[in-house]
Image (cartoon, rainbow, N blue to C red; front, top):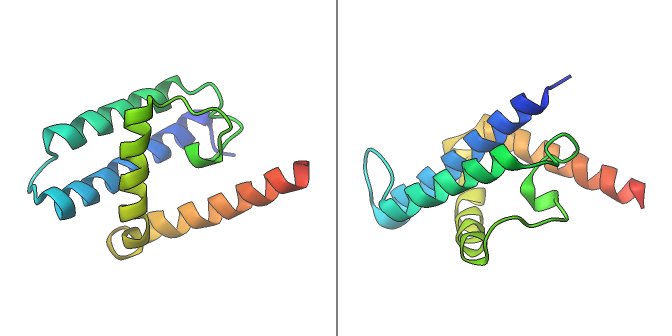
Length: 113
């Protein structure tokens, strides 16, 4: 069974990969992140580190509590909308794992009702 720390590490890696892809394509930054995307990446990692629900959820999108500040929440949504469909071309294993885990979690939540 995966530990909470493994899940946290995987989630942070996924978010960082999505932010990096977004920054590279939208802001044309090479070899790192622009200041705005770096701030979002650090914020997302910090929120993940402090998440009290990590043991029972798969991803933030499945969480009933939204702990991001409204401006950061909007930024991460924009990143997810852009990077999500492109992840299969840049990080296929991560993307497929994310889809499978998200579907599994959605089913689990629906069966709970």
